[in-house]
Amino acid sequence: MSEKAWLTDTEPSTRFPVFTRLNAADVMADPITPLGATMCWIPNVLPGWASGYVEDVCFTSDELNEESAVAGFFYGYLYVNQSSVRVLGIRKGMTAEIIDSIFFNSPGAPPHAASESDQNEALSARGPARAGWVLSTSKFEDADEDAAIADDLRRNRPNLRALSNRALVARARAVMPYERLAWRSEQIGSSNAALGPAVAGQMLGADKAHLLVTILGYAGDVESAAPTYALWSLSRTVKADPEVSAVFDSGVDKVVEKLPTARGGFWSDFAAFIAEFGYRGPSEWDLGTESWESKPSLALALVDKMRHLDDTESPSAKQASHAAATDKAMLEATEGMDAATEAAFRGAIGSARRFAGWRESGKSSCIKIMNEARMALIELGERLAAKGVLDNSRQIFIALDAELDSLALEETALLETIREREAGWNALKELEVPTFLDGSKPIPPISDVPRKGASAVQRVSVGDVLNGAASSQGIVEGTVRVVLGTDAIDEFQPGEILVAPQTDPSWTPLFLVASGVIVNTGSMGSHAMIVARELGIPCVGGLAGATKMLASGDRVRVDGAKGTVEVLETV
Image (tube, rainbow, N blue to C red):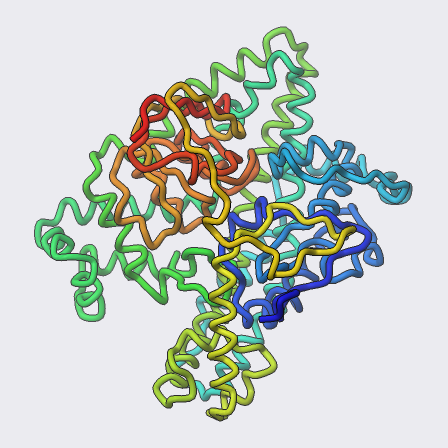
């Protein structure tokens, strides 16, 4: 590892210099694997992301010709380009400050350096028509097309075990153009999810702005919440079957052992679940992570937690309990509005809910496509490890895309290079990378980045009130459980308040077990907040340092509509 940069790092954009880990950490908590960077993200995801901005009438293609104009990699970690998101918002009629509050909740970010090029007359002329579409459309055909393509790729996967090594490499590479395509509409859905809340917030004014989170509430069609409902159903099946329950009582490993041969009931239902949702998993934006399909124990551990919950803890029951509050907030917000104003306000809320759903469905399509490459590469990695070409199957993701052809020929010459690279990549996980980077200044070298634990964070005291982002309505008091990764979810007990660095869709089922959620990063439009609203869980996001300030065993009161966490007891 170079003292200055990691081998897959990108050059910072000169036109759009501010980068942030906010939102990026939601979907890629760890440094990206070298293969994830060189096969998927740099040649396909970043250009697809940029094309979404262009198609959404926010930029011209030549404005985004720098590799990191929409996002980049520094110290091996994904950073979102906050500057280009700010300009996107400005061109949609908002301000950099509004965009920051909706997407990033980012106090401490480098200020936006206003430029004459923030405005583009030709694009602005097309802006009102585009905004009208965003606020009124009930269809998003591009997202539907991407979903159909992703489903078709998954449904028609070839028999990977029958493919040669070279064909496995070809299969992984062959799906990447579709990854690029799906990111286009994912970004259109994501960027337009801000317009409805911005319009609605301006109409509410300062006196009623606090109502917005409660009103947004339940969108009703958020795809990343769907696995939670399916896992809940599986947990009810286990709970009702004494024989299957006994297997779970023996441990998840025993359940995994039975998967290949057991039939009927829960076993058939779980196979159907994997067929539908197996592409999901922790840190699922990276090729080099496990999915529920490649490691079923990840999903089974969640079922194991849920089976101990009472039926009253179902997602439907929780959501129903919040419906009245949502309706009440809407009545309060629209009181005194004339008919036309109220119609416009309700239209903005409807747009916000629809695009929140399309944002999550777009992510699902991208992840499905990525998992098709992942499964082919896992098969290749297992073969190469069995032949001694690699030390273990996961090292396939430490390779670069350009090295796959040599590995497919079972050449061992790269093994020492991969071993050294793997050690360097693992070392990146120990870095306490900065939340923001300003590319207009020299990027600090890796050798200057502090290691985790090097910086002390003051613990909370009884009576402290911590302020984060209002994210999902509801007030709850409970005991804190700090969980730093999904590999530690076994420690979590039903009814505790989850405190996490960030969450991605693989964490979603844990929301059912939790009585509330607090995360270090994120804002109203982040994954944890969207899904918390879907499932009726109070949530406070963007509480920087929460996982260090709070400790397992603390008792707190979470107010998701206000974005506050009051400390009641400490351990």
